[in-house]
Image (cartoon, rainbow, N blue to C red; front, top):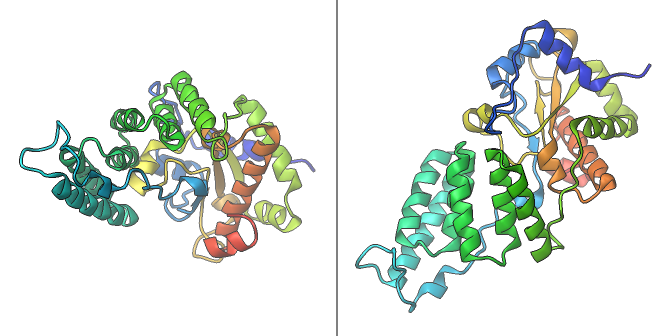
Length: 319
């Protein structure tokens, strides 16, 4: 019998009175983590904190080499008494500390250091890239946009910079301007970026439905046995980004217990896979590409639910 995968989560939310509203600013695209957990039958919002991001997005800190500042004229906005060599050394240390704090998910502390680095060397692109990313991880889209605008002014030919600005603008709700940034990224670096393929939520759900019908039998059986529903959302919930450390660039997220861990399955505690339409579309050039991104995202999240780590997922082609 055909199954309406998307309606499962909606019915659960309606039955339990979950209020999920999209904020006009474009930031709060769903109910909070705790409310959503209650709507889905009480599963922990952090039990399934395993998500898929586009690999090309992760860990890029390779703008202008700091050593190039040695012997150069100090930036007009730099603190008095700083020589280029001193600025390069200090900013390098700050960026290294920011990276370590990011790995430990101490994004607020990392943002504070990024602000300090911007004071020391305001013309260093890597500083503004880090500041924009940490601001976004802290839920401050306004600061993220301002920082990434500065990045694109410093490196106007960087497709990655324009792409990052586009993402931040999406979080601020500035869809039209974001599309312009994505288009600029695709022009500058067509091998890494594409003009996003945009469709309505209804059309996106239809493609996702095709994906679900095409999954390997063992994955479909698992979804059926666990009562797992699929929820399409524009972006991750802001509360889950700020409070639970969910990557704002995530393509999908498993909300539920890992199979075999403590916790009931089925109707008593239905799980859900959230897939994030805007983030997925950002990496899809056409309908076929969208289909493949959704498929890989769903398989990735189910793999996490089955206890597979990223190495195993990568080996099986689901990373």
